[in-house]
Each structure stands twice: as structure tokens, then as C-alpha cells.
Image 1 (cartoon, rainbow, N blue to C red):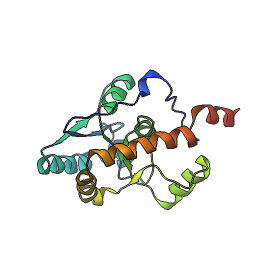
Image 2: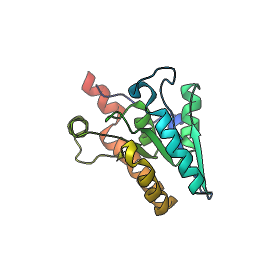
Image 3: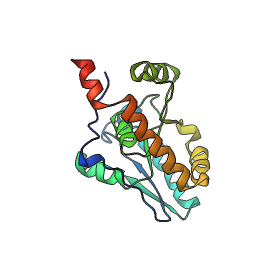
Amino acid sequence: VRNIIDFYTDQYKIKVNNDNFIRIGFSPSNVKKRSKWETKGLNRTTKVLKKIKNRFPNIKIDIIRNVSLEDCLIRKSNCDIIIDECVTASFHRSGLEGLALGKMTICSLDNKVINILKKVSRSDQIPFENIWINDLFEELNKIINTGKNSIHQIGKDNRKWMEKYWNPRDIVNEYI
């Protein structure tokens, strides 16, 4: 079932940060639960993000927890990179929100999910950066070293992908 993201609302206006910082946001679903599916690998992801912050002086990290959806979207809109999760082999609403906000969005995807995503979207492209937790530190290093312009371009392309392949009007018509 495709989640509908109504990204034509004011909450999803594209915001581009032009300062010297690269902001990375991560919003785990339910930190009171114990499984990787529910926490989205909070402990391991947080450790990687701390290492990244220590390595790069121009990085800001935002772990978004226990806030309303509205506040979550505002904080995500201030990020350059959104991490959905890197442990479950799937994407979630959080990742779709990142794409809709025009952000580079990271999650782990296995081949089954990739094939399903291509089938339901009718696109051969996968907008997510497919990165697993064991590779997250190394891959974030590479991404950060490409610079903000590259990160922002991927974000713009992600929003265009959402408009073309995950358009809320089209999904509603599919349901009807």
C-alpha cells in the first residue's frame, strides 16, 4: 500500500539552507520499543552520526523525537540529508517525507523492496540513497565530501521524482 504524502501543502515547501553547515536529520519512530524495525536502529545510527559530527566541523545533527508531525516536518525541512533508517531493508513514511521535502534521503533497501518500489511507482529509478548501517559512516563521509551543491541537487531530483511517480492525486485515483 502506497503512503500518500500530500506534499502540495505549505508544510512541504522546499527550503534550501545556503549556510556553511550540512544538516543531517533522523527521526526514529518509537524509541520505547526494542526491535530495529521500531527504533530504526537508533543506537547504531546515533553512534555513526556522532562520529560524523566529530569528524566534520560543518555538520549539525538533529535527532527528531517526541514531537508533533508538524514540528517534525519543520525540523526535517531545515535539514539537507534525511536518514529514514539503515537497518530494516525498507523505506517508511519518514523517508517519503524526506523525498517530498526535496532532501537527499537515506535508507536501506533489499532487492525485494527495490523491485516493489519500481513496480508500484512505475519508475526504473530509486530516489533513496541505499545505505546499510555497516556502511553508513563511510558513505556519509563520501556524501559530505561531495559538498552541499551535490546534496541539494539530489534533493531537487528527489522532489521531482515524487511529483512524477508518487503524486498524491495519482495514488488517490489508483485507490478509487
